Amino acid sequence: MLKRITAALALTALATFAQAQDGHVFKLDQVAWQPAGLKGAEMAVLWGDEAKGTAVWAFRLQPGVAIPPHLHTKDYWGFAIQGQWAHIDEHGHTVVTGQDAYVRIRANELHADRCVGPQACINIIQFGGARDIVFPEAPKKAP
Image (cartoon, rainbow, N blue to C red; front, side):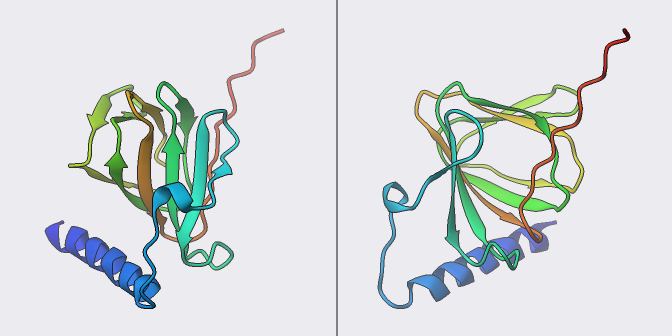
């Protein structure tokens, strides 16, 4: 497990070095934040190519914003760089993280997220392929 974590961090550092070797420094308040389809949620490609599935993403949630239960069809690794992020697993177990945490979410693992606050939450995420999000259909009520 430690080898996987070390490898993931090394990959992130290498990618950062490759992007910054021309001497540019990038700040998160200068990235091209785009709406993520939910009020108070934004995302941005930090580096890599979205079309090739090599993008590394920043996700920002405003305090109090929650992403309902969802899954992704690819594994992803992520780490918190700002705020208090709540991760909720499929059983409703909640873990609130700060900047001392990283996560691996496996493909098709149902989970939800919420920004506890008091400041906006930002996570850096790398998917094992193209980024996607699937919201399971709500059970249909009997007529």
